[in-house]
Image (cartoon, rainbow, N blue to C red; front, side):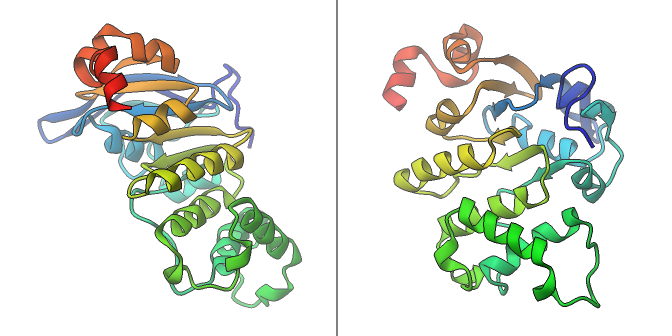
Length: 260
């Protein structure tokens, strides 16, 4: 499936709303992301960022409005169906198979995309294309030297790198990363930003992130979500200078500078 809609958008949200009981969490979000754009979604706690990701990836169904992936409406579809259509998501909590090796984790991520589906009666070692792709991914995420190490024995940063590898293993054109650098040191975060930038070349990226250094270092555009509404969607420089955003979230330029 092509990752580009006729209108030129890889992902488009149209008047998206989500209520839990009488509480409206997402309040008419419109967002259009072009192919290859890297978009960071920021906002205070309780703004609805995780709910928005859950709507896009199919964990929640919207109360109203639409989620369009390359021009095809995907709301109402199951997460695995959306994944097969070209959208892949990583989670805040590391989501790997702890008792499989690095290589085995990556190969699991590759199998479906290569058309093997369920391989109960095949010898995995004989699947040359899956093994080659897993090796490529392992090199991309710089875990070559940990090939046969169980995922549970990796460092936290290595586990997050492995999860990125699994997320991109299926060849999805749209990648969602939920707080990818949470819990990392500054040096780990810096290396991880470089890694994300490298492995998502040519892909469309949406990330929820609290670290403003990550946001301004990675994103082409920033969507500011406040109380379930998009307050601004623009380049980092424009968002940083936006008076409404400063008031609601970032603080004044002086406060931003002090924060960095």
